[in-house]
Image (tube, rainbow, N blue to C red; front, side, top):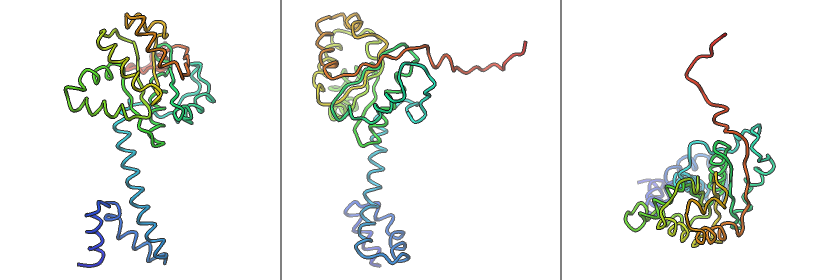
Length: 252
């Protein structure tokens, strides 16, 4: 067994898979470029660190459960929805996330709320944060099942350890009193510990109609709006204006 094979076995035992797989290449580069022993060691550790960071980002991106469209680099600033380029760029800096600040994106359907929220979630993952994207319906389901199934229990634990939770389409559908209490307890537990990005087509005042409980709604809003930026999006549906058709254009 060669010394290289021995080193690879050591790497396997120590779970240094990147060094194990890339050792031959790194050694060849070191010999070709006549680098020092110290530089060689540095390159080996950087190889392992880079691979682990890449895998960690892939894992966090997968767990975020993002919708299909989330890349804000492709955001169409010709869309007149009330959000200026400077404002979006400032949101993407994520300074508000460091301050446990919440963001509410409020406006009619099709004005880009979900796309922006998902994009901010992706930006957070890219910068090393634990961020998760959930519709209100999905979140309620997790709260219902967290004491019953392992999958929901694991999802709940991840949410509790998150830096950012995106809740899409909040208060779109009526929920039961039990689910409303469970949702409030979650928000109360997360209050001032993580940031929330919420999308909704209803004003906070209309939430009381959905929850059918003014006292609970007031307490919920108190926690969400304590440190919060409310962004009102306007305009008609971007999807409807740019919708596709299966028919060929007809000439008059």
